[in-house]
Image (cartoon, rainbow, N blue to C red):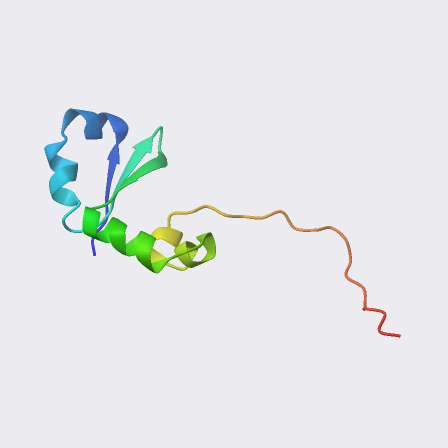
Length: 85
């Protein structure tokens, strides 16, 4: 599966290009260098909504997860042992 990245300007000016590119894989549309939309063919969209019932499962799809920036904040607190008494 091949992905394509276009700016929103390119997407708006040349709809034939993304419409043809989506045959080979997802088309990522960027605005000011940041991915803002993903264009999928209908078959792939149906597969995603049918196969994955929650966000955790969607994030497990390598093609989708690779394009998600997720850097949760780290706790500054020191972990301590559990009191099992």
